[in-house]
Length: 288
Image (tube, rainbow, N blue to C red; front, side):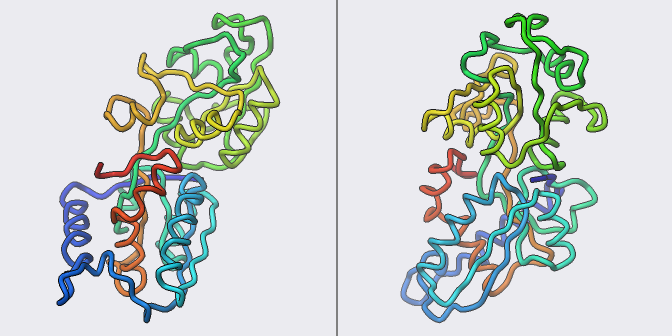
């Protein structure tokens, strides 16, 4: 899972305009091509990239294929970096990217469909209720190795980190000003469900992960909790309000301006028809 996303303001505005205008063309019968089923639509799409986005895009793909039985869509994770590289190399029709694009990735067309955030997660029985930016940095770089040094019990800190330079990793490292080479994990875990399992099985563990997926895990009984950041609760509500400082866009990227089946699918992913799916995975619709 990996992610970076850029496009200067002018380029992004143009891309969004194209989505709104050329993607949502009104038909003669007054309906919109954005919502009107097309029984003749056929073909195959490959989406690769962000493991955070993969479950959501799988759900969206199922809805799309139900409307268009002649279409097959395959969704593969592997990190935002893979999604970007595959899109640039035309190995995938669409890349899934859970971060902002960098300057070197500005050649891609990016379409943001939702928002998410990254938070530090502990076992719910860990007495620590908050950590400062410096404390988080010290823990993940090995300078602090016992919970008693940050107000917890006398127990070793078990640090978990992602095995790939994914979107959550990039966002986490950037916010806490940590260099990847300085991270000292006890174990590497991917994807997000594995991080929840790691903390569930290790009450002295600490990891970073998607806010939305962590909320969903807690709702079904996982013994986990997310720490606030800068006194702001790590919740979907905080991300929606714009107050949460470690948040990110979830975007679909393409090498060229979308057309044909790619355009139809991205169009669908930007429509109100996927709002329920986005909220089901505890993400926030981009334009809510």
